[in-house]
Length: 475
Picture 1 (tube, rainbow, N blue to C red):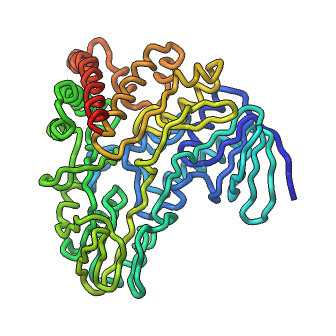
Picture 2 (cartoon, rainbow, N blue to C red):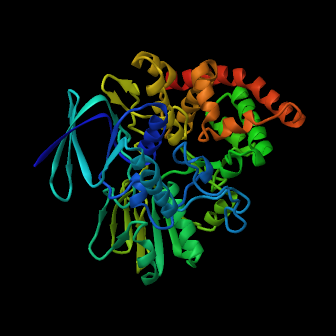
């Protein structure tokens, strides 16, 4: 059975990027939109996330531009004490479902097709199929397909492990962990990213003893200090003083290793183990309280990645074997949110196609909303691509140099474009811009901080370009 339809835009994906794009497009145009997703409800990868997951960033500048998430509450207890609330996975799911039910569908301009697989798009025709009934749809798209799946976001519960697991070995995803944990005496976290850190925090908070936990860390990570990424005037001096020192550190840096140590010294970055030099940077955000908890885990396995898990031992990719306790539970945390290493940039706007990418890192919601605004308000794809330049996502400290330069160059471009500047100033998702724009002439101490900050921008940009050239030449 085939149903034929027509629409202006067809958006593949109802995760944060797809939802943020459509939300702004509704405000900026009269377009009709079809949204297709293989999940049963909006929220994208949040539907597959583990039960104890939370946003890493404050809730108040996540989601869609029209609808705030959370209540602007500052946590009074726990490891996030003193900082703005971090929405739980369930809260994020409920939020996106509410946006769909109370804003998108009542508009009369959005049609939503859950549990459907996008199959092909060519010559203005897009096809998708319902996963349950097998019903097929063919859509004539008059404007553009919006592909929010480009970076292929993965979560532990859906990704395929890259190592073998022997018979009789218990290996679970973080989603399965809460129901499985009590049956075991020891635990081994496999993976070194933010999911692994969340698992470590959960195990410790649930009563596991630190010496019962082993942690496979092929590499260590630099982490953003949550204190300085609150994105609110209540944290003006913490954030803006830190950004000022960050720019000064960039301007004087001779190499990336010293730069990152200086960024740690000014409070911008944190690392779990002070005696290790991290080689990974994915913009993961963490609090000092979480850092202190994770430092309790001392059994680190640092000789590379796992090749196989066998009875009471790990086989590593370098051929070494690591003995493990009997009755151990292994938790697979090796999924990556996006493929940082192989992610390739492309023009965001092409004939018949929009591929949302980061124009402000690490803010996918703001970037998607901006793409929708630019699509609706600029005359052609050439002008749109000039306004929206994608920024690569870093995998390591050297990659951060390029991402940081992209952020700074884009911010300058936004400020020089009167149309875009006005929209950015009104967008709640641009939290840090709102912090600086909220300063009044009588806020003399704040003005002094911003004056110092702005003086550091040009020297930082100049040296970033030199550092990038240096490392590109060496490569």
